[in-house]
Length: 312
Ligand SMILES: [Zn+2]
Image (tube, rainbow, N blue to C red; front, side, top):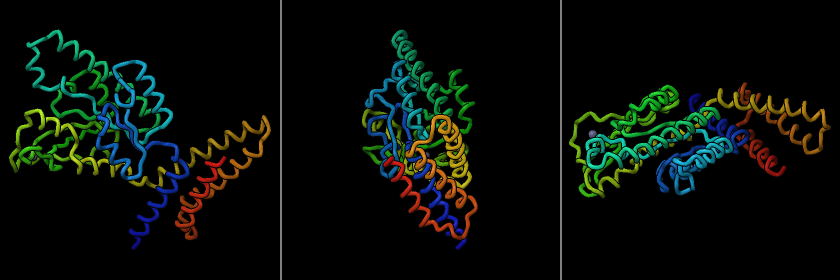
C-alpha cells in the first residue's frame, strides 16, 4: 500500500515537474536518423516531444552551418535525452575488405564520414553542457570505435551497453528467422546503459543479414527495444531531481527581483513573482510530503499555474 502511494506521489511529482519547470523542454532529440525513425515516433506516441536533427529537417551534419544550427536548436530546446546514430556503412569490417576496389574513393568517403563524427562529438559536448544525457550508437564491431576522437568520446559517455537484435525478436523480413545484429551504445548514465542491454546466449540459430531487403529491414531498431528505451526516457524523475530543478528556478527568481528593483517593478512582473512564490510553496510541500499535500490539488494547481504563465 505504501509502495502504491509512493508510486502515485512520484507520478504526481513528475506531472508537477514537467508542468512547472520543463514545459519548454523537449524530451528527446535524435541525431542523424531516418525521417521515420522509430525512437522519435515512439516518444511522440507516448505524448512526449521529440525532434530529428537529420537531413530531412535540413541538418546536413557534414556542413559547418548545419552544426551551428543544430547547436542553436539544442541550446534553445534543451532536450532531456539525445540519441546519436551516425551512418555506419563505411565503418564495417566488410567495407574494410573492399578497400582495394577503389581506395581513393573509399578514403575520400571515409574522410567525410569522419568529419561528421567529429561534428557530432561536438554536439554531444553541447548536450552535456545543457543537462541533456546523450547516447551514441554504432554497430558493435564498427571500426569507428577505434578512432582516437571516439575513444575520447567514450570518456564523456562512460557507460557501455551491448544490444543484440535477436533478444528483441529481430527477424528476417522474408523467412522470419532471428538475426544477430549487434549494437554498442555508449551512454551518459548508468541507468541508460541498463535499459536495453541484452546479449544473445547462442541458444538458437541466426539467419545471415545479406541481400538488399534484409539489410533494409534491419536498418530499423526492433520495436520492443525502441519501446523499452523510450519508456526509460519518459520515466518519472525522482523527488531529488524535482527539488533541484525548482531550487534553480527560485534562485533565478531572486536574481530577477534584484534586477527589477533597480528599474522599478511593473505590474506584470509583480504577478510573475507572485506566481513564482506560489511555486516555491508547492515545492516545499513536495519536498516535505506533508499530509495536506493532496496530489490531486497539487496537480490542478500546477496546471492552473501553467495556463497563467502561458497567458502572460
Ligand atoms: Zn541470438
